[in-house]
Amino acid sequence: MAEVGYFPNYSQQENKVTNYTLLVLKQLYIENPILFQTFIEGLLADEGKKISVGVSFVQQKGYTCESGISIFDGVIQQTPFTIFIETKNVDWFYEEQLERHLENIENFQGIKVFLALANFDGQKDINKSLDKVKASYKDNNNIIIQKVEFEDFLFALKQLNIKSEHLFNMIGEYEQFLSESNLLPTWKHRLDVVNCAVSEDSIKQYHVYTCPEAKGAYWHSRAKYFGIYGDKKVDSIAEIIGVCEIDKCEEIKVRCLDSEKVSNDDIINLVKSKQAIYPDYRPFQMFLLDNFRYNINFIKDTHGGMLQSKIYFDFNDEIKNIDDLANKIQNKEWCKFK
Image (cartoon, rainbow, N blue to C red; front, side, top):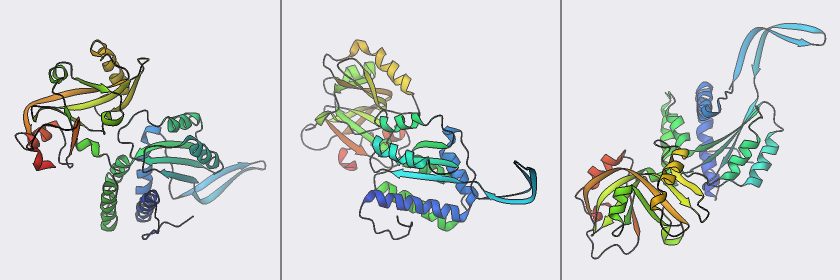
């Protein structure tokens, strides 16, 4: 066990992330316990649970025992709670470890909050262990298990009415650290340019791109935007609202989705509605596309065509939507962004 400090002597990146995260929370509590309570309750909003942070001052408080009722003129009390944080640099939590954690947590008094903190990067169905353990404790009102993305953690911090310049600057440095550690979802500003010379017309007609299962050359990093490449340029782009994998038994597995636009059920139903254009091979993955923009003319300015099946362009957070992206790359050459 080690106290949280400004100069941690950790070699493992995961331990550094945990230290800096706890350091921000410690400073937040020191500055204002009410803000700390507001922050934690914001993270737990989906659970509908509240915790009480700090000391309460009440008077004329009554208690009952076998001898009868006694009323105290004044009571200063602090309700017990414990927050446990498991930080991962990857988006995978192990069932055996989780079960040991929760078994130990049950021995503590008061409300227990377990935060699973990672960059899940919008992925779906990749961590069934966490969902399984959470479901087993759903009837325990004293234990709250919550999956939290670093992006949501940072967003909740920024929603607070922070007046301390020191704390404000610390949160800014924390954000920079998370970004440099690849713990924030870079996919929201990424364009996945795919060589679609053969299937371009079909993609535009059905708003779907299909390819073999996500292995080797066919593995795609998460991206928000899809670029249709052909004839040495990207002339059309679209938003990727979801990616699914369909196996040999026709089971549909949602790999990722844009939760701001569609639900898991929406994606499943969309994929089922596209059965007429399923490819002949199994398994395969299907990219569901929407909100197309045409006449982009994003030009590959180097010699020859694309040597690989895909290439990525990562933009900064100035790209808020597909129109921003279109304006950024329209009639531009690739070399400007590589």
